[in-house]
Image (cartoon, rainbow, N blue to C red):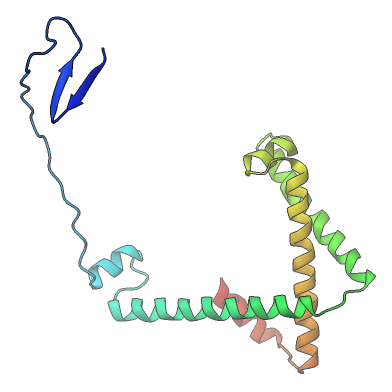
Length: 175
C-alpha cells in the first residue's frame, strides 16, 4: 500500500490506521564509522604484500613511479609531434597491414575462446559493432607502426645505440 512521509511522520492510506499516529520500536544493530588507517610501516607492508616495508621506501617508490609517468607523458607528446611532422611512404602501409592482421587475429582468437562471434565480442567490449572494433584496431596498428618508425629514425639521427645487455636490463626493469 502507498504511504507518504511528511514532517518525519508516516501517513498511511490503509483505512484502519489512516490519520492515526503510529509508534515504531527500532533496534539499532550496529553503528560504524570510517576510521582512516595510520600511515605507517605496518600499513605499507600490508598494502604492498611485504614488497615494501617502510614508509620512506614507499614514498621513494611512489615518487619514482610519478617521475616515470611524467617522463612517459612527455615522450608520448614528443612522439605525437614527430609523427605529425613525418611523411610516411607506401612501405609503411604494408607494415600497418601486417600489424593490423596480427592484432585482429588476437581479438578473433579471444572471441573464439569465449565462444563468441566477432560481432558479439565487439559488443561485449563496448563497441557498437564489429566494424567499430576493426576501425580502432586499424588506428592502433597505424599509430604503433608510425611511433616505432619515428623513434627508430630519431634514434638513428642522434646516433643512439642500444646494446643487447642494456636492452635486457631495461626489459628486466619493466617486467
